[in-house]
Amino acid sequence: MKTKGLFLRLGIACIGILMVMLPVLACASPTSPTTSGPKTLDLGIVEGISGQFSEFTKVQVDGMMIAIDIINERGGITVNGQKYLINPVIEDSKNTPEGVVTAANRIIYDKKLNMVVGCGMGAMVHALATVTDPANVIRVPDWNNGTPQDINANTPYVLEASWGTVETAQATINYLVKNYPDVKDLLLIMPDDGAIADVGPKVKKLAEEAGLTMKNPVFGWGLDTVDFYPLAQKCVTLNADAWMVNPGWESHVAAFLKGGREQGFNGVVMGNNGAFHSLQKAAGSDPRILTKVIMVGFSTETAEEVKALPDDMFTPLFKQIGAKAFADYGYFIPDMLKGFNAVYCLAQAYEAANSFDPAVVAATWKKMDTMETAYGPGRLCGQETFGVRSIVSPNAPIQKIDDGKMNCAGMADMYVP
Image (cartoon, rainbow, N blue to C red; front, side, top):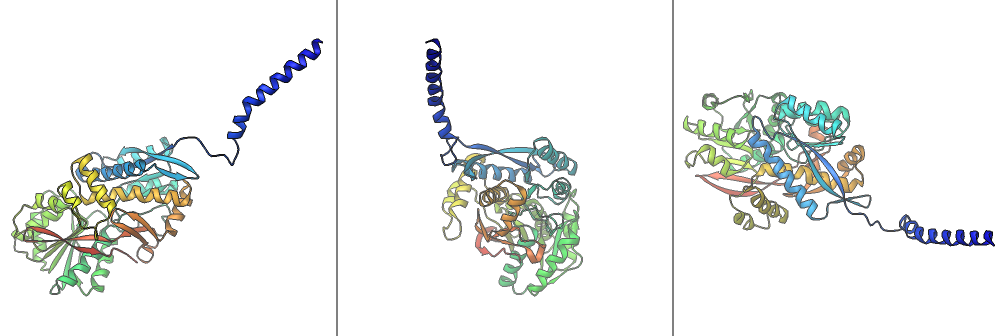
């Protein structure tokens, strides 16, 4: 009887255990839906939050934060059926090559992340490449300087989500020859940061294909320059019909523009990616100075102006970004969109690849025909010019400034073969 009672108790216990385990076994079934919430994807960001030029470079980080917020507000990204919310892991490069290397090492080796977003300045990009490229991690810069260190056939993990020096040069040259037929020659003015030897020939080719003669040599200026007036004076003596200050922030374009106008240069001045109100703040509001200026990109001074932008030129996403930029940061300029597109395009590549593996993501990125950007669909391009098809290049607004006033002169084709 004791034995029978023991078996009875064991049988009851086994039934009880089985009843407890049934829900667990059901949840473990491959066909059962997951009940877990979203996980976190740490996104490595290296950018100059402090140091020289940080007033310009930290703008890109603001754009990245807007992209992350918009993505997360939509529920994040989905990879292998799992939702992920993006968490920014930011390391300050201090805008020095040494700072970039330190920041990148922290992201890759201390934080164990396999991607780095950010860094667009020439010397900083070159420093970043020394860490990311040997480690075979994804690198998504926020500007393409047009050098081999930026991107080439042997940088398989470099994915460009922003146009850069060559693309903006092409757009402004095309607008120039169409609207200023009397212009016959062009002076390229750019920082002497090691990129002149690579970028100069590319811009010269674009100019010659458009029927222009490019003055030789390229006029270089040092990154430590404080007084641009003597440099502008030298540029005036070269007697070019038009100047292209590219790359360069609005303050650099303004310095050459103001110095040139005050010393008799009345030709066209072209910048790259800039905000009119930032140029106006740096150059002054004299309409005799702010005239015959062409720049790529577009921004507004108020949130209300963003809402009023024409729908046939500016996407709902562009307007959403502008509204959020004013709400969160109190300003909105084109450089924000460089950071935005870097994060936004990488998120699309993760979902398309259905993987976080750098090799899979990079290969998927290059096979995509278009990606959504702040300016609309961006076409993948760059094979002929850079040796690799991994540049996302949407069309971009052209700003035409005359007599102190700015108008959007249409959308420029930014596709680079």
